Length: 475
Image (cartoon, rainbow, N blue to C red):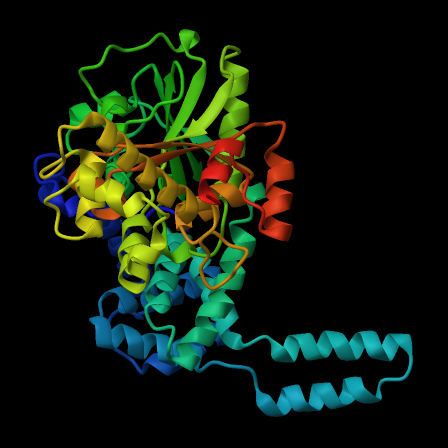
């Protein structure tokens, strides 16, 4: 949707492999699965995989036997290499609807005459259409951590979307997960420094927008003038599904390095007038396409409003992950035609020794390298960069002409936010420069206008923005 998962394995100073609680928890669960499977001998020998799945469907024995068979299959899947897992998934996917039975049920529906016969025929057709693999998938929910196993199974399936058989299995599993992870079943949980260590470690694992590098960094993000909220599911209580990090500040923030500076003084949150949503992360790849991010932000706005009466503004400080890529492509395709009259000369004056327009914009963005000391020329060149950014967010579209090209912009605009401000040098990190030439934007969530903005964007593709930014984009 709008943020990607991080790789905590790159942080040995914070999370040594031998202390990784997540790995230890997984080993404990797999050990429990092995013990359960051993009750019926399912883990003792590698029997024919299809037969083992058929045995699960047959349901012989009691509840303990059924759970043991499911645990044996789960353990068999995790023990396999990549090729073996694909074989497992294809075998599972092959438990499809009986075509002859579906045809017969459809024929009975076609000749049904009265209401009772029609209802019975429809019911029978629905039963015949449901593939047995759905019942197999549901059996995994009976084992410890079984729901998490299915979420991860879908993540594996998403990597094989080109395979029609696996795509059908993925669609079935997605339907189950969409029902199980309905917003009504999710719990909003605040994460703070007293939260379980395993949960804090996962916060580090999943943070991708602004990496958490040390325990001090993590503690700073959970201080008294900070908040972190996550949605969790009752069957995955120690696994955040999505979380948002919030800073309680005075005024709208425009630079993420200043916002995350752990040497900055801690503000009394009761003095804050603005809540800044500076990082939102989806945590479960297997739940892609099952959206609850919009509900999270609205719930957190409500929670913070109740806790702090002085909060008057709810804003993001958001990245533009596609801006530089779009700008490079547009300059390659259009060249000077992308710029307005006089802007080419403006950039050349601001960065006279830059090798091309793209290099000039990059130099101006962070005031690096070949930028002139003429402040007036640089200011004019910065205005060119702001105009191009406003155009990118408010006018550029992807395949869907009603959808913003930038994924983060689409997420916030579809949630009912409006583009409030564009910040030069909002993220001066290498990642910020690489993705967006250092620019960041503020999207404002006005509780009184969220629904109207959402409806306008969802229905007409109208992107809410401050009038000055709208005018700038259409210059």
